[in-house]
Image 1 (spheres, rainbow, N blue to C red):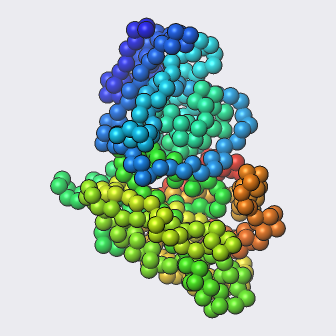
Image 2: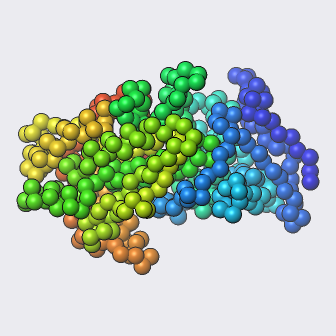
Image 3: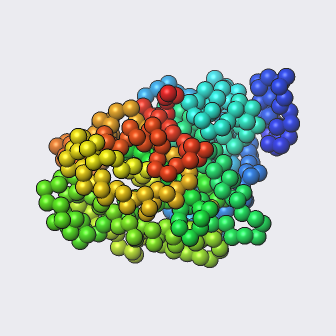
Length: 461
């Protein structure tokens, strides 16, 4: 094997100064003069240990991840970048829960197939979220090893070829998921700094019993990819040694019996006929659950997180049986809480009636949501869309994909009817959400990400 040199992040950082070009910095940082012969199976082991996070913790086999739709476009020119050589991933047969995967050379036999670290650096810095999440070119350069590590793990998570990422795939990782992860890490650091040495630190999650608590709340329209984003963030937290949990407002829908009662109490109101709008959630149950989650501050403390079965009762849905609820164990660092209507503010009655008279009852129900959820959330990610009608197209794409895969899916007309029950709320509440932020939010702890029809972030305003 050819000799090579590696630099620690600290050593690499010291090389950077205002009078040194990034190209020189990165060339010094890269493994120098490493040309592997694939035919001889020469291997390079690239090791990275996050300096600001605990040592990698084993992922419990009880916490197996199910990959949601990635919404990656297959269009775009091929692109590539350095492949992580360590390639650690899950293995239920291993006592540690992690095992060594295939190791690949940094440079393939055809150099033109691979991008340089500088190319990747420039691509990262061109992203629309870099400044929003508080990054500078210098900070990106100093932490380029982390970007390589995170990107490699995301490629494995979503099962895409690391050597031939399309531009949309590359943008999804380096312009979206990783910058948001960096922002979340900063929010966690700020949260943890509020506590003294030796104190139990509750997770970055809501709830009443911890006045300094907050959760990272995700507010975004349906189909925009927020669930996939949360999934990616949860995975990155886990592989960097942080214990995390994910919840959705969907997990707190009323039971089938509760939904039936809601329909009976609101005859003729199509917005409350099915789950979704304000009034269709079990708020006391959500407070009870999240209060318990916030108390998972010690090793050995466990609880099960509720889940909702949308397929029950011919699609009307019901709370899933507790036997299938996933279990989480403390100490938790962060809880990611997502939902399409998080942060909506009640509006004057005449405003909502002008959008849809049926929305008046929903608007009244929304008043209780601030006290139950929103006022305790201190860190927010809002995914902004330009046109709510995109929701219909996104939902239709998802249902078509399900039907093509042989799974039950709604017809085009059923999709239209389903989405129509949400559009009045979007039209009424999104303008205020985008202009004023979520209900009770702090601008210092708010990240607004505007996405296009392809679900990728754009520069926005």
